[in-house]
Image (tube, rainbow, N blue to C red):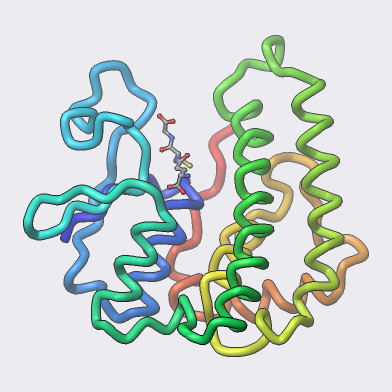
Length: 206
Ligand SMILES: N[C@@H](CCC(=O)N[C@@H](CS)C(=O)NCC(=O)O)C(=O)O
């Protein structure tokens, strides 16, 4: 299989984490895609131009990290990250959805800095996304004690790791550790997993 990624994309990171958690590093070739570039050759592989994108050995292409993670978790027909028990899957999916919602908002916030010169940045969007992010930090200060977040590793935990791990003050002002000791301890603990530690995004270019 070939997985197209950028090393800054949290969604690509999530898919890489799952490949590591499932012991599939040797079956999944990681390829850096050129995104957000006019006429990128990557558009011939994935017309949407987004990452992650997983090309299976029979040539089928999978877009969207949730689907890629689902596929990789089921590759050995013994899924662990998407629990099979009905009540457990509901709790995992509930927390995964909140973490993904936060990740989506963080992306909008971050793009104002990465892709726009200061004079074109929207104060409205930055304020809106900053406030959303901090409200959700407070949600997770409580939710990290939920057994779903402290038990066996699952999609909710890995998704939340992508939101916070290696993202101190990124974007500028994202000082999520302040006043949140439980979240701080949780992120530092999950950061010890190989799948999290070995997928750390590169430092931002300023
Ligand atoms: N919902 C998608 C989001 C993927 C996404 O937005 N990827 C961004 C990088 S974080 C991307 O490829 N951007 C390139 C572009 O928009 O052209 C997923 O979970 O895979």
